[in-house]
Image 1 (cartoon, rainbow, N blue to C red):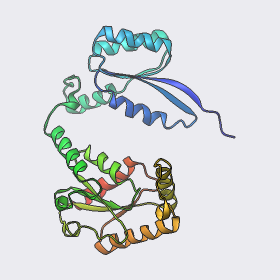
Image 2 (tube, rainbow, N blue to C red; image 1 turned 60 degrees about the vertical axis):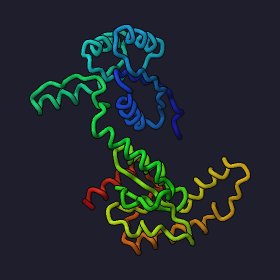
Image 3 (spheres, rainbow, N blue to C red; image 1 turned 180 degrees about the horizontal axis):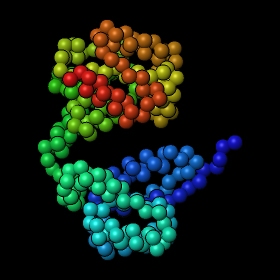
Image 4 (tube, helix red, strand yellow; image 1 turned 180 degrees about the vertical axis):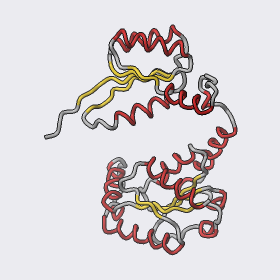
Length: 272
């Protein structure tokens, strides 16, 4: 018998954007399928006045408190106030910084938002995002040789979201749809630089995703678009193309976007 789902408050306090905390909190909360976190995110908290208001809100909705504070004084305030309220409280970065300090033999610089500095890596990611948006769904095929990765696949195999995820990591990613009867761009088959990966999935999964798309599009004629037999034929055609060209394939049926991207990056590392 399945247990009823319970809810708890998860408070995330950050002196920067809070993305690190959000990822850590969600990763931990995902391990508890019968408990759902009600997230309270407090970004850019950098003064005691701001922190006091946050702690007042936490007192009104008690729960787990996670925080990242470069200013150790503010961190101590959070620890003390949470202890007084009887709430569990964890500094997410401090244990990691302690390991770095022990290994490197020098204390951290304690720079707020240091990971968001406008350095070469930042502009590389912006450049990759621009490239990926311009080369979505087969656009500008003449530039495919400039990509780091090209994703190919039939409709609804998560090509676009995976491309954007990779671009956020500074990887120029283009994607090209596979459509029966429509030849792939010659520039794709001639491209030697990029890693070309075919994304596939089960016919059942693609049919379900396509059906949801059809339901959200008024007046859309589904036809063979959601027919499982037709989808199976599309997938067979896509596999044939990848096999003929020696391009690796990844089955995304039970993979999240993050897992698919990780598998692609592993293939890229082997190619280098």
